[in-house]
Image 1 (spheres, rainbow, N blue to C red):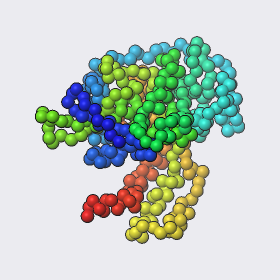
Image 2: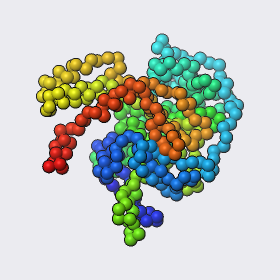
Image 3: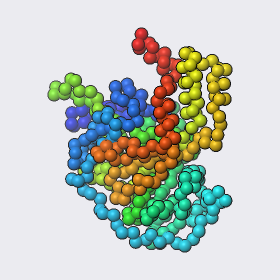
Image 4: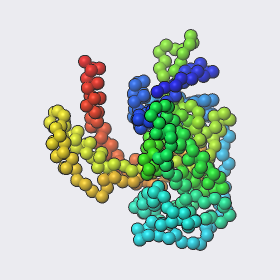
Amino acid sequence: MFRQRLLHSGVVLIRLAGQPETKAGLVTPVVSMLGFSSNPLWGCRGKRGQLPRRQHEFLGSPGLSVQNLSKLKKPQAPLTPTCCITEMTTACETPAGLTMASQLGNPITASERMFEMYLSSNGYTGWTHEQPTLGKPTTPDYHLRFGHLDLYFDVKEFENDDPVHHAEDGAYDPYRRLREKVNQAARQFKHYREFSCSLVLSDPNAARVDIDAPEIVIGTMFGNIGFSVPFGDSADPRASARRVFTTGGKMVDYKHGTAWNTTFSSIISLVPYPVRRKRLLIARDKRKREAGRELMHEEWRATAKSVLTTDEDTVVRIVVYENPYARIPLPATLFRGPFDERWGADGDLIRRVFVGDLLAELETELVQCDLRTPIQRFMDRQQQG
């Protein structure tokens, strides 16, 4: 569903909304329908040197523009850590190196266990779970010593109890629940301005939130994604719709032309990656091209059996979305696993600046596959014919 709003600037802004059944693919189909590239590296650009009054303009080139803060109200310089000494207690660890409970006595959640599994499997040591810091009234979930830096992470998971998700119809706001988690983490981080702090989002309860969609997570940070359409007597008839950021971003304050929540170094998505399912798609497409037709049921079963099951059928990975306005950035050498991704500032653009080697190999093969469903191929043939 679409909702239109008339702006004082003389454009019609079409803001994305949708029904729960289609929210997982909310942006890409609409982008394709309006003639934009659905490449995951998408872009925008605004007037250099200041935040636009209401929106960034997407250009369709790889990347997402961020504004130069040279003329904005800058965040304060990094503070000198005054409370980096934590209480001398040790975590209760299992033989696998995972905590059974936090040092505050809280039971570990599914998301926290996933985060610990990721840290342990990727060789990170020296982390603690809910270990109080002297002089601090709040305690983020994890502290990690990396090089000479003390990094703090607050892990948030989503419960499958949102009545909006269980409604049979109505609009769906993909940003609301993510921004609620940002607000919760901000309360934990308000006393840690001299440290790098990151929010980790995970969905082990299948709450159907879009933390694996870059456009939604980045929109959570910088503003709802919408479309700007010129109209009126002075509008250029050749002008096309533009993808834009609108309002609601948690890392920018468009009203006052400055950045906020600068204690957040990044938002991190902690998500499973279905390695075997991707390999099945590649194997099926290869077999289908060899046969020159759709596979029969038995052919498909034989193809599926040829893809061996391993310990890495599904892997836990991290996708980092850097905050370009952060007071203290997250180290660029952190979280660079074989299936990890990182989105960050590259000049005036936010683009995917890192992709793990194994993920890159799979994506190279997947981009050559015809992953359309039979219905999609039928509709394409009808349009062409």
